[in-house]
Length: 470
Image (cartoon, rainbow, N blue to C red):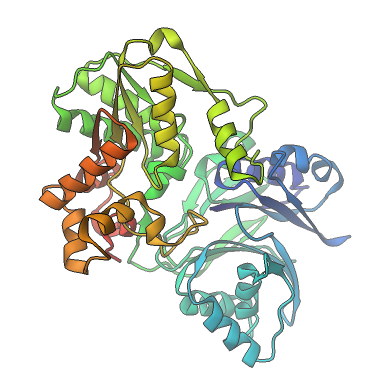
């Protein structure tokens, strides 16, 4: 995943840019960058790897030495950005969030128009450079941004820094957010709505699907009006969004709490654990909602030790990564030994982490571990956002089990039965997951309950990873 932040100010913007970008650290762990423009010194840019140190540490020097009245920053799990580009539009910096499915097709299109590419990432073309090249195909930036949005299959949101201001372009179906904040001396554009609150900004507006706006220190102007259709990613509420985040005016923390309440109502007292707990951090609000609805006690049978174990600390060796994941978990034995626990997590993707957490609780003396999930079974790899480095459906534990149960990849109509929580095939899949993961019991959130918890109409949400519907 990725997140970005942009600032335009009548005074120096680097302080706001530094901390606004840092507030997106939960969305990326590999690379980060900042680019600024100053009327006297021009453009400057810096990129750092953040795999072994957090953003604030890596960019501490730049927070002091960089200067400018406008800037953009980005934190990413993928390509290095922002990029600094020279073109017939002049010099600009660009950062993107999203996923391009037709990368090869668009690369050929751009090359055939006489453009060349320079930025490579792990032997592949940098997608953000491709977006910049598409923008450069048109005579002005507004038409270029519209052109890129029309051609890209997938999803792309863009921040573009020029000498005149910061252009913000939300992807055409609004799958990811861009929110504008304002204060007396300027404006900001942010993926996360909470990222600017402690910097003195107030909510100004949220860009609609496909909307393009330009931010200048003296105002915000809409250059392309938003569309009427939206498919914002529901996984933002379930997992990626920070608890203090809101999307389309709907709170992440409140949504997760309501999901937990729905899970408790579905259980209807069928299990009697000694304690309800959430897997830190995204499972905690679910667990509080479950405990409040059921009347069962809430507790923390284990905690994550994070002061010197940041999320970004990931050794290259898989075995060591697995070991570190375990070492972060510190048991509270008085709340585990001989206890029946009901543990709520946001989701199961491959199954590795939650299986290890369950084994960790059993090894620490738990008698039972009941598992509840904040979202339905994930059956389809995401086509629209880079939520995971793995794109194959067969990376999902659900699809591996379905293939085993069916003796091969099933046709679409059979796969649809595994989506239906009232079907026999669904029940068999859940039971097989339960057995393999060593859970005492297992229940997933229903899709209708999850959608109701967001407070948005179903047609406004992208739920492709759960039901395969675009």
